[in-house]
Length: 175
Image (cartoon, rainbow, N blue to C red; front, side, top):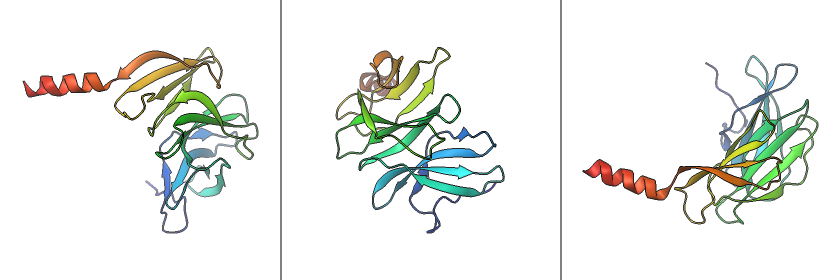
């Protein structure tokens, strides 16, 4: 096993919480984010022998971080981002059509997500399934949303976890 060093300054502040995607030549790109003095998304390009050969900051508005990438056609990358605790709490998306070299402005997709991680997957029919927490001030609820397009409209399709269910499970455990 080899340690991945994404930041030359004692490897501090660079975090990865999403799966990588592969480029045509075999390199992997890890959606990562920097979280020390400020928060911002970045992409780490890693060779098959584990060397970080490029680190690209994704130019977005302040406090968008924890990127989750979906790829489609060659060179197309869609990056879902969430906001931190002090901002308008909605999921945003930025798009690249050149393997992440340049990015579009990050736009709000109309889905609330107050200060909680997100993840997404593209389904066989091309639609997107997105896990998010839509409840203001409550990180206990997790809902799956589905949309035909990246920008929505997003429709809830399944409640994975709710605060009520967690409380019920605690009460049952105490019996």
